[in-house]
Image (cartoon, rainbow, N blue to C red; front, side, top):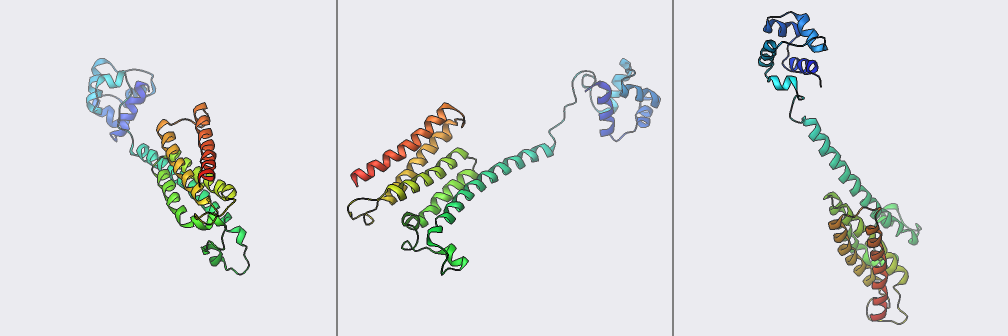
Length: 241
């Protein structure tokens, strides 16, 4: 900012016209106008008078830009931006679980159901096995993911959400046992889902702490460990259950 611009800015902040400033300095309005447009510069004596009238110092007029506290609007913009980011992350998490909730009900069909009845059906005997069995527990995983997103723990929220889906798919598709066991009537899908979710919580905490960017080799390795570890846990459960 040039000196003339600084003079004009301070004058306006004081609520003074060029005429009023010129009158306070004992000069003509044209002299002040020339200072502000850069056509001329104040003498050393006028500089000190000018600084006194405008409530600043000579150095501020001659050298640096005027220092002023950050505008409240800037702080508000940052808060608004941060809140928007949190809400978008929370919305993405909620959307993922809502999609899971709706898709899990498609196999029961719509025959004999009202809209409300279809949305609230909770019998594990009617719903897909693991979906129906875990319906109550999924709310805890959902709230954990949602709370992490709202708390700016975006990586942790993403990992737990991914772990839920990985655990569900592995448990539903590969959890069957060839012989009946006392745990859940020849099905270990519930155990697969639980251990994979817990594994994703641990992996999510690691990712959150390290902060690896998605487009990095470290993240690719982390994702491979999450996916591969989930499969290993499935195999171990099938072998030892």
